[in-house]
Image 1 (cartoon, rainbow, N blue to C red):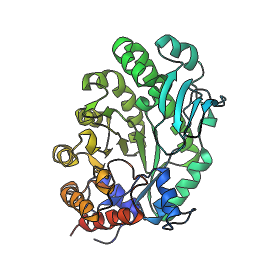
Image 2 (cartoon, helix red, strand yellow; image 1 turned 90 degrees about the horizontal axis):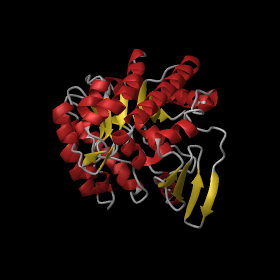
Image 3 (tube, rainbow, N blue to C red; image 1 turned 180 degrees about the vertical axis):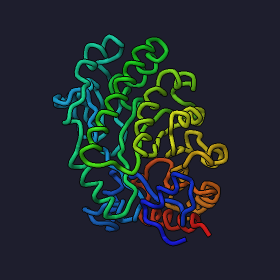
Image 4 (cartoon, rainbow, N blue to C red; image 1 turned 120 degrees about the vertical axis):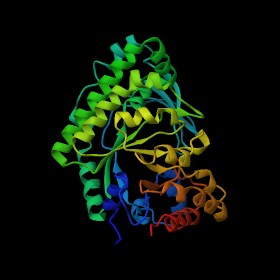
Length: 361
């Protein structure tokens, strides 16, 4: 087979069609780019996506904070961290020394009544929520590079907890399900409205990439029954809209989400990304069970790169890539994001060896 463009390759992979090799994509922590610049491996203005010639790229154009006019308020700050209140009424602590998920400290919204009072009246469609220029420019870059271009953003699960926190959201699923149903309906409607406006004015992407971290170690945050009752209606609405435009749906989820896969597929998920090994996910098992119907992205234990021992990297790749690539449907990616303790040389080897293994006869 002749060499394909990134757009052609990913399009075929998501349809489980023959390709020349597996796909290639990756996420990096911001600290990693900085470390590699300081080590003299890349330029400060260099884009890692272009540097490694990835097959796809994404653009995150939506601002989903409840109060668009709210200016974040710094409540406390020291050399290591910053405590601030955001436009969702959430109080978060961000580590200033490294990239990472902020600590959830407190929330204005803890109940259905709080949602009705503080968020529901202001969470409306507004053109200011859309970064038209950023989407337009990234879409044009992807076309120039002949990459597969994804609109990316969060879906209903990842939109609810920044407003009320995981604890209150999960308690609400059990004790105030009508609150969760209303939030899911509100956010899914808003996501579709914003996409309709953006795509009508700037053109469609090649695919839709949703981030939905629905699991932790060895467990999802909810049972499949609770997923079907409360979260799945929002997924169906947003996934159906993507499919109505002929766009495949990729779902990222950290944590252990294997019990949710059948229902995510029923909702319309076309590809699952990350498959976090340390949370209990086994990408080879998932390939065997679902790989004829579900494309996979990732599932390579990022911890094998931490020691920068190339033989360890090789063993992990040789264990997984030959299985994951069977019958097409696979994109090489770590099972999370590449941190700054991974050297440039180690990651470059990961790419080189992974693509060697992932070439089809």
